Image (cartoon, rainbow over all chains, first blue to last red; front, side, top):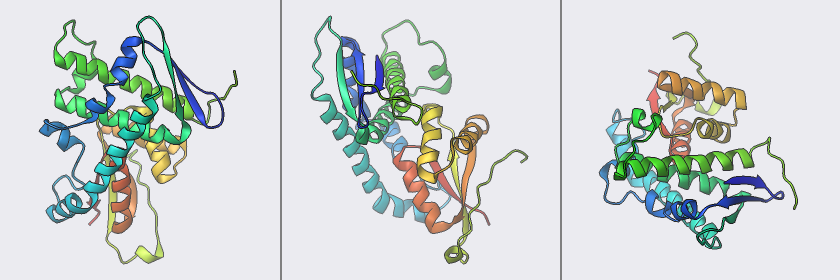
Length: 168
Length: 93
């Protein structure tokens, strides 16, 4: 999988294999913390770590809804960009990400990574060692976290100040 | 602690406000480049300055990324939460 600026406004992500595309299509579901208290708590962390209960309560009432709207909006933008990405076995796909959508992509990918790690209780050690050779849900979650992180890095590199656009 | 970076900003309109630290805590899931880029976007830091704070978070578990009036500190924490970083406000008194 590769990402490059194709013009001043667009990043093309190409070489998306069938399996990678299938994981990408799971991004919205992966970012949804429903059903996991750990994931919900990670996506709604306290602004004082419990030191100021009054501020924590105000935060939950006034700020958290805004943040949740931001997160939902980021996932919707990703969903929109993915609509044109058709996948078929044996053929690589590509997709175009407008530069204006890169922040939404980075937030949605991070949301998915954090929610997955919290939901499956992935520790720092589990994140840094080679994943075990099994098909347990936590192992698959780790692979998703790595894949989404790889795409985050591609988008950061492609949208950064050092990237160069090229025309076909 | 020697080597600890403390960003300070003084604003006349906030001099009567209680000074607060904005602290970012380590999260092993967040990419280091992502954290560095968020510091550049939220605070307008140079890449070098952002990377110093990112490395401090990575190595020491936390970094005071900004110090100033409470109202603005809360706004910064909200922005950092919007990027899903673990950030808190700490009173300096």
